[in-house]
Image 1 (tube, helix red, strand yellow):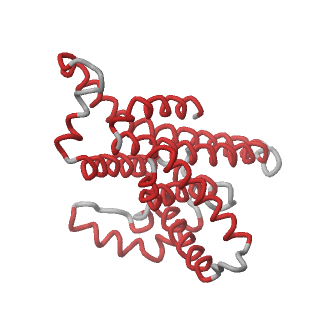
Image 2: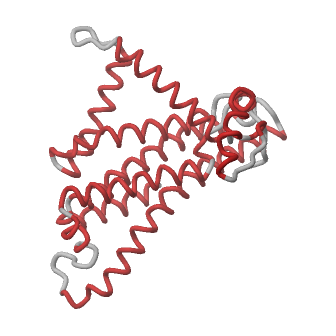
Image 3: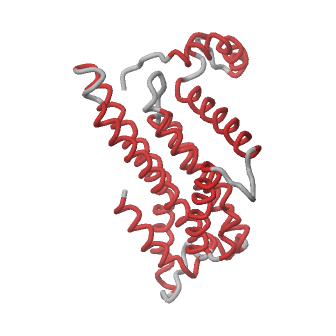
Length: 262
């Protein structure tokens, strides 16, 4: 995407660029203070600040007797995510709601903020989507080790239920490649969809501004919501396979379905 300096990026670099450049200089990074903070990082900070303020406000308005429309909507979303976690992992799946909810909310917000004039979607940068993918990848492996123990967890990479032991040397490299490819799959799918949509809108807007890009922006809302859901679903599937190796075959089937939906 052609580089265009956003007003909020310019503001952040004006206020904090010199401090960031000075802090990174001893590490060997000599940055121009006017561009020390990249646009995608600024947008991530904006989303973080906005969601923090919104969460504190909603929390102050929570009511058991007279819930508002926003509270009802959020309760429906939480109930939906808890339902997915319970379906794939049983009752203990609810313990993973904080990660699933946080990453889903962040990706959805990151996809949607690009539709606001003067802002961009940070998920149009591979750095952001790769960071989300690596976070999920590390998390589900750590949870798998904590749930099963490191020995049993590592063993499931080579030994599949019902398969003879002699094919373990064949299964092991396939499983390793499969798990490593998940980082690429998660990051590139999200990046490609959001980057492509923003690129198309930018090209159309440069030819016929204002009205012509609107249909693509509306389609981008649908695409952004769908990609956030796909990312969440794949995260749940990978997590379920890590903490329930007995159900791994079933999880692989669900994963194939989620990939097809994407």
